[in-house]
Amino acid sequence: MTTLGIIQARMGSTRLPGKVLRQLGGRTVLDRVVQAARQSGVVDELVVATTTEPADDAVMTECAAIGVECYRGPVDDVLTRFLGVLEGRSADHVLRFTADCPLLDPRLVARAYRVFDAAGVDYLTTSITRTLPRGLDVEVVRTSVLKDIDKLAEDHHRTHVTSYIYTHAAEFDVIGLTVQPDLSFLRLTLDTEEDWRLIEAIVDHFGDEPITAAAVAEFLGHRPELAELNAHILQKDLEQA
Image (tube, rainbow, N blue to C red; front, side):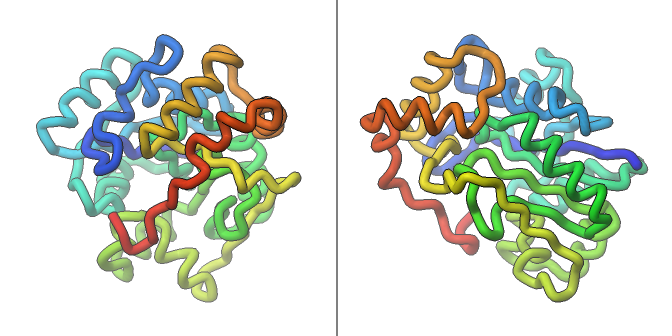
């Protein structure tokens, strides 16, 4: 079985434009996600999927600098972007990553992938019943299923790539993986300036190596003022781009 990792990345974030190329501890946010995906040891090939917008020329340039392949496709139809990456490739499974998760833990990625592979399911995600902090989630899907939903997914389901699968779970073989202890109260994704200030403080403290969710939670337990920086931020609804 071969596994393709696809990282969706673009400069045009509505709340924090250019976030994927911000410098974080001497490396770009995108570079950190690329390195975490590679360090998981379960990705046979890795591609960054960006858009054809002129602003994303910078993403393509960064991909060349850090040595990762870049594919360019539609802005909002991210499912079509993913399927474009898959054209001409024979990967059995796809690990989906987003470039706004610079604290992605490669050990969690590896663990989730092993569960998916052993169970032989269509799709696995850690976000159905959330116990991980937002920003550490893992998704794995069979390539054949991703191609099948191209005929079914419309509107926001094309933006969110896999949302048709978990909102129509009766049609697929789906596992929702939970990891204990429940740390879902923490927000470690990068979408606002408040998120940036928190993540920057975490990286300043821990340095360049991958950080476990438990270690972050312990650190923030002693620095509640940091955890409060983005505690008020609301995640966008599924229907929102």
